[in-house]
Length: 464
Image 1: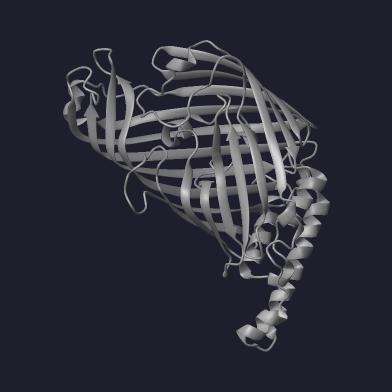
Image 2: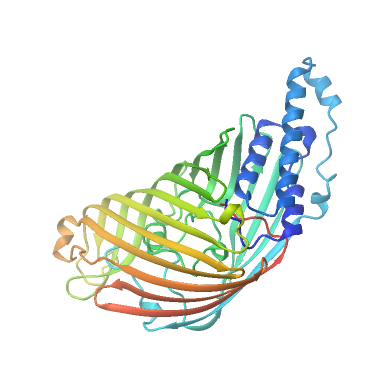
């Protein structure tokens, strides 16, 4: 599989070893976790891969020995097992700490304050960002084993607007049986391919238009996630999540219970020594309450509109990687694509705030799609080039009686993007990106970006 280009040699190995539960507590969940790590970093540096494979063999051997031995009582087994206190490990005193610093220069033909995607509801963090020089999103990450049962991870986001937010803050139960990996807290959802990745790990500066239109840029969940990794040679993963549903396309609700549900399945593997692939299907169901935004009506007014109802999003993703003989150091290629489908139904209110004196609520249904295709080629050590195409289809929208005020969308937003980046080490990257964005009828925005990414401290391997 292709190596993540930003994984440091020694620090990534020490982080992977320090975050693993001790071998004496070997369980199905631990074995599954090690298998997942091996698959994700198969093309990482050989020394780290060999160390993880050795730990996997030791853990499986320990599990077989435990099963073959005569079954002692629970009390005797607990007494025979050397259980350390929560503060006995090095990680308890010295968690892995890292920071990611980003900045950029943007030259935009059109005013980013007027950005919108015609025919699609607006929500989340979308758009090209501000013009000129600015800081990008910076991250501070802290992770460690809590004890022999739990591990924790905290990622704080520092925005260019001088605000601080919790991007991810979750615990992982590491002793679950049958290969289950429960996670609880705040986390990026596992749906699709890119959604779990942090922005600094993307191959382009911004998210594809489909992510912006259907997920508000990136979908995060406050709740519970459970993954199951099959104990097979071919990677196979099932996942399910429940959460509060506060984020777009949903909205905050003052209610008990579950606000959103997500399920997904991913599979992948190797084809010979040079090729690897992964594909998956995901489904999100959530509920929006008073999801208000601005939309231009037939009279040219910026009317406030609101939606109350259910939103369903399905995603199909595919990734293929090529590295000659499994060695991605000199050259490699990555092809990536995702297809989105969304259906919404409920009540739609025109002129929510009454500013136009025409407030009206009617039934509403919509079915819309979108997709992107991108390729990134490392043609020599340290240097990569990439191209991406995005396209959205407004599909079918029924405003009911509000069709008197609102036009049925027919425009297909699209965007072309080219990039070249230089990665002198696993800790730094400089990227130049050009794009031509057509998200509104008759409006073309040529966009030029120059970006830097600096990584400080121990930073774990990125997913496949």
